[in-house]
Image 1: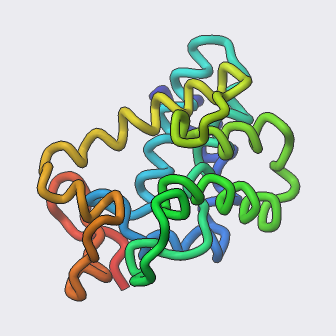
Image 2: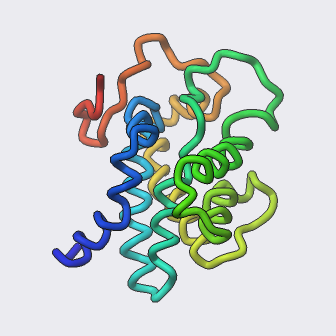
Image 3: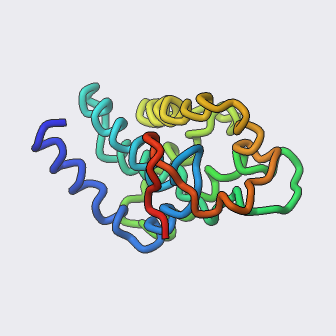
Length: 181
């Protein structure tokens, strides 16, 4: 990213990434990293691609950053639930509500649609904006890291509990620990 693009990206996301509630996502595991890092990566790629394509890159970037802004670390929840109430099916609605409550200044129909529909086809209803489709695809692209270790797939989709020693074990792709308290 060029210097001016980098500056614009940080200007766009700075208020959100520094927010106390968003900072908590550094401790929520997502694949082999934190939710914070995952959302940041999706937002950074979305910013670059949507800008290059001439799309509404501001709203696309905000929606990408908040797409997994759900209430709590779902992998620590030990309650048994019906499949349609598992994380993959419900977290987009939770993230949308959480984003609306914590960041009303950024919330609009496009950002709402990006967050709400990023899990298509699990959401059944497809995205309605090009920016929503873009975030949906970029999220899946960034999430493909789970296939590096297929044995973790049952744990990731909620069919197997996360081990007790995993609670603060968010790792960066290169194996180093990130944002650990």
